[in-house]
Structures are given as structure tokens and as C-alpha cells.
Image (cartoon, rainbow, N blue to C red):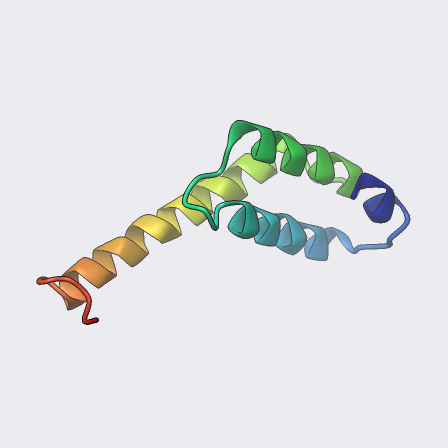
Amino acid sequence: LIEVLESTSVSHAAARVVLYLAIQVCSADGELHELELAAIIKMGAVLGVSAEVVRQLNALYQEEQLLRQKRIKLAFPDGPPV
């Protein structure tokens, strides 16, 4: 993956979107593991995005997931329909 990223021209703005999407994908199983986050931080370095920005993107994703759960709980107090 690093080789692919190094050989690809990605704009600085698009790099953050790519990293956010990586966080979403790696979190699809319900957890972003430490090694996954480390790999995304490494991707960020290749794309010129600091580890701090990657952590901020991850924090944003986590906040969005909490808000999503809150919305579901409010909309379906007895649980989502089956």
C-alpha cells in the first residue's frame, strides 16, 4: 500500500479524505485496532499529513459513531425494527 501511495499523486486535501475513509474501513468490524491506526498514520506520513491530523480524523469518526448510536436510540427506543 505504501508503494502505491508513494507512486500516486494525491492532493493534500484529498489525502485527508483518503485517510478518513481508511479509518472508516478499518473500523467496520467495530474497532480500530492499534496496528490499524499505526498503518493509517504511516499512510498519512507518506501523503504529507501529520499523525496529529490523523488522530483528529479518528476522533471525528468516533464522535460521529456515538452520535449515530444516539440517533438510533432516540428514533427506536424499543430497538430497531427487524
